Length: 114
Length: 112
Image (cartoon, rainbow over all chains, first blue to last red; front, side, top):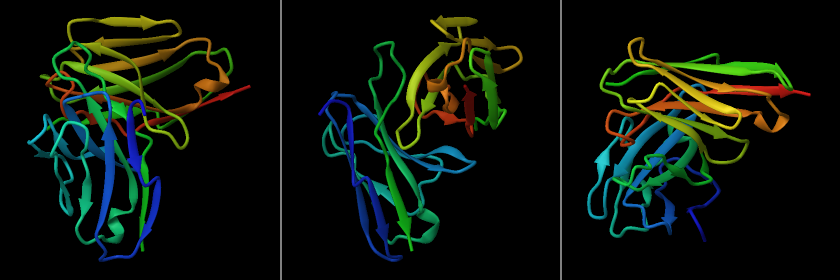
């Protein structure tokens, strides 16, 4: 792989169920992010991690948790899914401090909570 | 916090014409402004960016301009082609790329 891999690509989930969205990158980027994309609202930051072992809350963190045990993986967990969490989820990463500030995005996970 | 507005929400142009998308931001401390292109079913892809110490940047048919005083920046696409059809997002960051705030997006359609 080269870049960011997200899994699954799509999922239908019953409300109340627990779900983990996976994100793996092989670029050795130190910073990683989770965004949700909803029609008319653009991309909104859920959680981020500036380096392995640290995480932070974004604009819409409620109902979600993340962990960053190593550089490559940044899973997003929905502890008890609700219909308002129906969205397309994008994982992104970047390198800090090398003059290239842009994100690399994954292909997304389309989640439907019913 | 930062707020980014983007206009228009949809834009249709004839092939070969130019397209302009405008964004405004609220935080005067913002210093990095990227533009992303998102094709159907794919993740956003960085196409051009500009830093606060530069007023204009070009890359082939794409250019971005920044007016720090007015707090707005624009994407210019010249000689548009059908493959330019996509959703375009602007973003702003006050910490050189950390925790962007994105605009709501512009759906560009290039008509053959």
